[in-house]
Image (cartoon, rainbow, N blue to C red; front, side, top):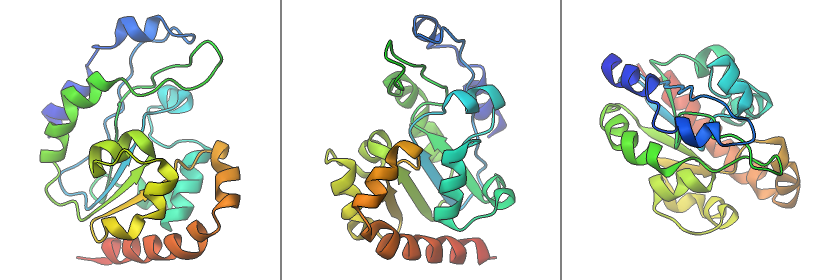
Length: 196
């Protein structure tokens, strides 16, 4: 496992691509997993703050996600319990308008199958955003339709929208998310964390 994480951390496949972005940054992969983890957070890609800190979901999105999951910061960052595996391990950068670039497909193609095989204890996968939902759920629907059909993916997977502040309007328009999905998500996560 350490070899795989070390290989990911030393990956520089996207160096030229990232240098050509508005942020002109170097790759900084953030692998965060352990074979003992039971909960998988499958996301999109780190943001700029995570790129700087080297800690996944080290931002307001992470605060919201931890609230959705009902997890403390300490439990969320316990790699023996929670694996955090985005579709790209590096911050992809911003486009000319300042919007997030999508996760480079080469990252998932290079690393994801190996990482998933290295996580045999995963019992629940929380699938955040369209890119992760395509890989983990095989869906091509919109995030709204995929998340609205969350019951179809139980018991092992629960799709979520991204917890970004940009989705605050989405949360207001879809009150069923907080009323119906979040209680089930929290109950499943709590039960999983309580298992010996």
